[in-house]
Each structure stands twice: as C-alpha cells, then as structure tokens.
Length: 241
Image 1: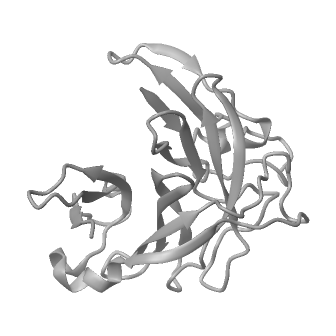
Image 2: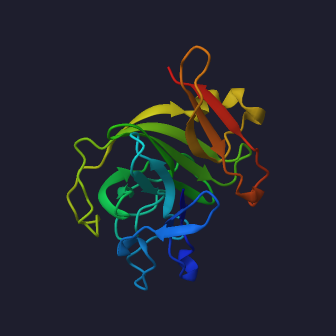
C-alpha cells in the first residue's frame, strides 16, 4: 500500500510518499527529490498545501505516478481568475527502486471565477492506458452560494511532452507540456445534482462494470471537514462510453 502527504510546508514538515503492509505497518520511504522538500529560500521549493495531491498506479499494475496540486515556487505562479502561468509537475515513480524518474509539466487553467480566495490545481489523476491519464482539475473561488467549485476532467497524454526531471526551474526553461483535452465539465450536470452544488470533488477511480459490460467511473468530494462552508458527502457515478 502507498500513502502520500503534502506535509506542512509552513511548519517545516516535508511531503512524503511511503509504503506499508495491509495492517498499516511502515515498510519504506520513497526517495523524494530535494526540489519537493521544504526550502529556507522563499523563492524555491513547494507551496503550502500544493504538493503531492494526486497518485495513481500505472495502467499496467506496476509503478506509480504522482501529481503536484500547484507549481513549485520556482516553476511558476499559482493560478488566479486573471490568468495562469502555472506548470504543475507529474512524476513517474519506479516501484522497484523507489525513485522518481520521468517528470512532465501540466499547465493549469485560470481560476474559473473571481472570488475573495481563489485556487485551481490538480486534485487527482488516473492512469488508464499507456501514457494517458484522466486528470481532475478543481477550481475554487470563495463567496458563491453554490460553493464556488468548478471541476473538470481532462484527457491527458505525455506523448511529445518534455521530460523535465533534470530541470529544477521551469520559469526560464524551454519545454513542451503534456497535451490536455477537456473531457467533461461538471457544470454541464450541475442542475442534476443536489441543490445545484458541484462540491469539492477530489477523488476519481474506476469502479465495477455495469451489467451492460461498460465500465463505471466514480468521483468523490473531499468535505474539508466543512471548514469553509457546509458541504455534501458527494459521490457521482458515470458510465464510460
């Protein structure tokens, strides 16, 4: 079993990825490149609550991929409703060696709405075939009665993207990001959901197949302990066509 955490950058606690057995007993730590760890230089390193947010087993059942929610400080800015120069990193982890290998840049979109507090980032990834992923990108803006969430699923391929694993600073680098295609916008079904709310959807997984043989896709909201607003324990199930 793999466990991952964003740590607490503000308090000097590093993010981590660890393995354990079925009872939760620690087995080993994955070797985290230094660019993802707490840095005393305020111009480099990870952002608070913006590190390892999404993790998926590779489609073939061996090895893993992890995604940053936000860019490293030296890589780019955080998205706002005014724009986004915001490459978040996706990394391949070799299960046998426990090491990060290939890395790719995923360009985030601007925050969908203008709000008091704004954020947009990768919240989950799902490998479904060679070099291709479903990526959940969640935008939030405070001050809206519907919760302020705008969530989209992108179909992403790393084919033709630059391996940036040897580049510590993307701000001045020349590289090709992953290719992303909008697959689904949750605003399209907002009127079918409880109280018209698209909640803080942050989880995605394939589920069991339907009786017709088609695959199910399940998404789930993270309720943040309802810290900011009342929230739903929201599950949404799709049929993959």
